Length: 183
Image (cartoon, rainbow, N blue to C red):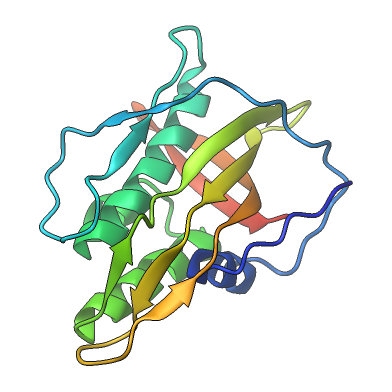
């Protein structure tokens, strides 16, 4: 398996959220998912959050994974992690780590500057898993992380992150129940 390494704050978050899994999942097949503008407004000077488009034939579970990535982007742009937390189960430790880290940065007066948006370049279902799981390849672009008010911005390089995201039905909707870094 080819390993992807990205020197981004999110990769560090995903690494902390996951227990260093580097399973033998095959590399996901790329899909056409160019960004479109989101309907949510950003109070940050960061770029407008993007939404990864999903094919009309995509499963509700795959759409839930795309939505979760959109919510990470939104939370990084605004500091509001409430929708991100709502889209995951309480048991998802990786999800909690990501939301807590974003909230802590903003609580200290920090922010993300530049194009911090995650872009899904591939979303592939993992076969024979219950509940459903997906291998997700995310691309990042260079941006700056301001860890607290008055702190010097820290440059972050572009990179690739490979995640395994598991979803489960909660009533009428799908939520993320596990998020693991497989980079």
